[in-house]
Structure formats: C-alpha cells, structure tokens
Length: 136
Image (cartoon, rainbow, N blue to C red; front, side, top):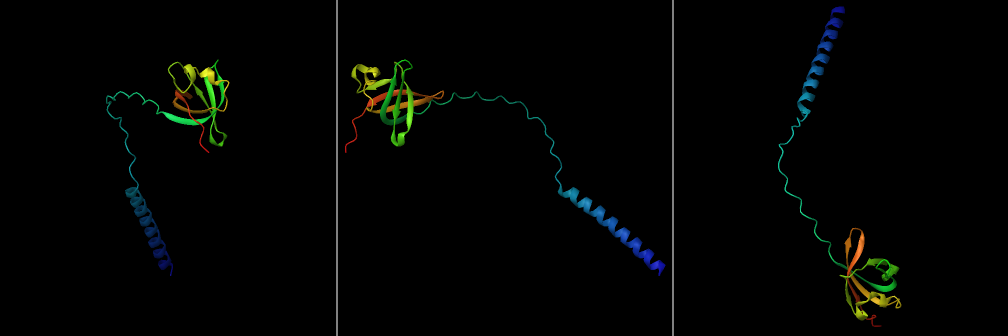
C-alpha cells in the first residue's frame, strides 16, 4: 500500500511538472515578441503649405452700435445673437452714404448684411451692405 501511494505521488508530481512546462511553452508561443523600434531613416519632409485663406461668411442682423474709435460694429441677429465685426479702409460699403460707416452710428436698427472672415480670432468685415427691411 505504501508503494502505491509513493507511485501515485511521483506520478502526480511528474504530471504537474509536465503541465507547467507545457503551459509556459504555449504562452511563450502566443505572446508576441517585443517590437524592436529602429529609427526610420531621415527623409526630407515637403515644405508645409501655407494655410488656406479663411472662407467668407455672412451674417445678417440689425445694427446695434458703431464704435468709430476701434473700427467695430455690433449687429444683433436672429435669436438675439450678437456679433462684433472689425472694419477697415479695404472694407466695401454698399448702400452706405459716401461709404462712411460712421453715418450709420445714428441709425441703430438698420438692417445690414456683413460678409466677413475669421482672422486671428476677430471677425474682419470685407463687405458691409445695407439691406431693405424684410417685407411683412
């Protein structure tokens, strides 16, 4: 009987050892080898193209304020959305007397259509046009 226990113990020990070695071999075959990172050969990069000019957008609303000191005008559009625009000597004026935006300063509520570009975080007006009030 002692001999039977001894052989069972040795057999179990051999079985456990064999399973352990076999599982380590199997897991080593499944695990991908760490990738060797070799530096890519230096390649000449093409020069970066200049960013495309900002696309023109339009905003329609009623004139709220003209600030001649900062060359800005504020319009209020639908949903009480207010937008501030900067204008300069290159800004086209359509329907404005003598192309003088300051003439609108005394006319709040005038319907305007502003074509503008986003330039460095400011809305630069390229065209300011007086539009007739909507027909009711």
